[in-house]
Length: 238
Image 1 (cartoon, helix red, strand yellow):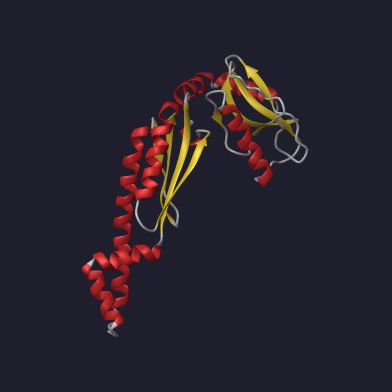
Image 2 (cartoon, one colour):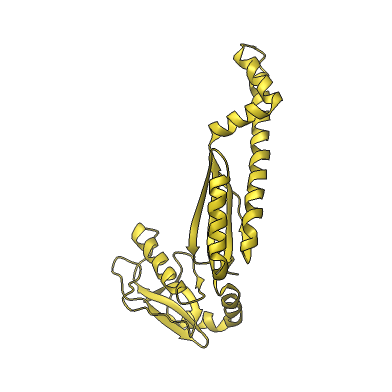
């Protein structure tokens, strides 16, 4: 029977798996497969596991439960192995790298930050603060029929949006990175202009959350700042 794999931990990790059931339409108890200094936390599955709401929730719950006992290497949703022997072989083969990762991630959690900006608020700011944009907008409103005006205004505003959001994103990253051991910035997708993750040590969590809350209050009109965490450190597993 195939195994669904949730995470890798050290062999001495306090697993406490009693009462935890796994993914699948007929969930069975979660258990550990040990090999030397490592364990893989798994459950038996007899079907292809797809990203349904219940299974996604179970996947996250198992990993978050394990995090309470110490460092874990979380696997992405959907990872399966054909049998215990395969799991044991992987743990043996890559033991040095897994142990190094566990050491590096110990005492930390991932926090994920996204930010977006209300387009109407941003447009009003640009027209209020940029004389060239305001002049083009006034000509259009006054009925100027020059066919080049809409394109010129659109290009100017698009450039201003990029410059302003890049600067805002850089400022937010600069303000929060000092609280993190590591961080990674991803390409943001609309409507977000910022998408990044931080690996925050547990002993700096309160400082980090206080700083984030202050930023959320002070960031300015029309900006939505979203924080998710603590999470398993998906973004920092090497």
